[in-house]
Length: 114
Length: 111
Image (cartoon, rainbow over all chains, first blue to last red; front, side):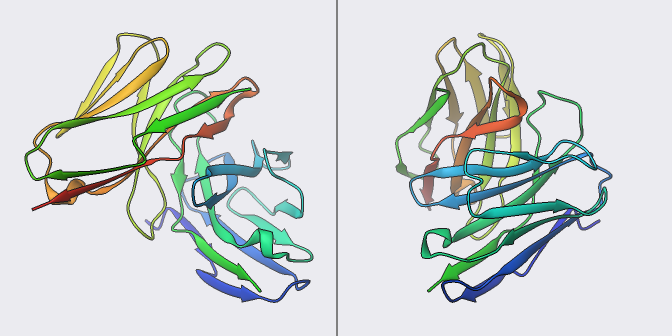
């Protein structure tokens, strides 16, 4: 049982390049999330998808787009990468049951933008 | 604005030396407070949910407590394997789908 799988684990980009971070979960969860984690800033929500077919902005959505491809997969796209997007990106999923706080996280994708 | 602040930023203890981590929050109408553990190079792992002041949850050497303004994660007789960053989070007013995380406390237990 893999849980939440993210690819790639590491990526180096040049300013202005584009890329997509992939995320898949095998727990049949309805909700999926993308967070970024920066030193001293904690985890910040970029986008989330409460259920298949819906997406909503989080705290820091600028410069990103998302696609909920199906119930299992939720991708994050950087159209024109900037050095400020250097970060560790985490995908997470949860059952739609609200207020339990139990998110299941992937192992992260470490992105460096030069 | 919903806010979560954790202290201290980092804490070093000797094996067996008990201590507490603090998570203070300002949120309109608390709908739960959540603790996570994060090992280096890994994603956070869920530990506890607390819903109301006075509630306590325990797991091995960890005990989480909640008051109206803060939560404590008490660690009793810690072992080196308890070394990790501990994060707390609360749902924002927009709903449980949006969590606000604190910056974390990096805990190191020396043998």
